[in-house]
Image (cartoon, rainbow, N blue to C red; front, side):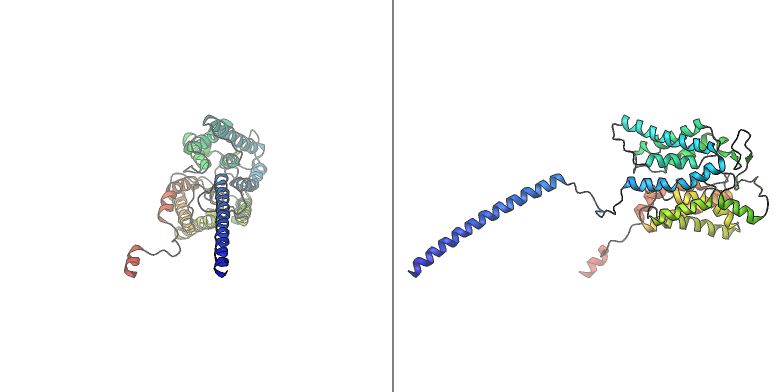
Length: 354
């Protein structure tokens, strides 16, 4: 009886094992099907996989909102003529990008990048530049400096600065005609920019510094008010839209060079487009290095070239071309300045350890 019971028990156990195996196979097959479905419905991209909860479009629009500060100053100091320049540049940028996207059979998304390019270009232009030149510059920025390289994320040079450099080379006379704030009518009074050789400051030095700080000087429509540019920069850093290293190191480099050559530090910092370029142009995600150390090297290069052009160059201002030159060095900086992987051991030391 015991032997019969043992045989029956063994048979029951074997049946249970078969049933369990078959159920396990069914479960595994269902899990495999689910995993296949998951793989088909989800696309795994390259690292990093941590999302901060902010999209590129949102970043663009926050950055665009920060440009309201210098834009308001432009209209306040240079009148409605500055507003027409900004509108012409931004509208042209959006329209040209739309046309090129349709021609390339690509989807056009209003992510704000074209608006930023157009507005940045406008803020670096003289207040009474002809509108048709503004349209040409904006079209060049989008068509050749951005879309010709593949669109957003693929351009080598800052599009707005490339457009400004193009206008400066093609129309140097119109790009160096500056007007005093508050003279926006037909009989507007021309004046030299503070960095020009013919410029002579009137009044006391403190009054001149005050004018530079608030923006009551001749210059590009969005680069004159140091106060509003600094406020916009602080907000962008607080929202973590830009990295503080680039503007701080950029300006600090110019300060150090000014000390070495005996230049007026406050004048070199607040005059021209140094603060505007350091906050809005040099911090461009696409055309600046990705590592912290690389950004410091990039900013030092921008500061050195800016000061050298101002001091020894034929042009009074060097911000535009200094950033464009360092844009060209960005791939090289990213190649040779890389963070050390955690736990990395050089091959030679690894062999010695064995």
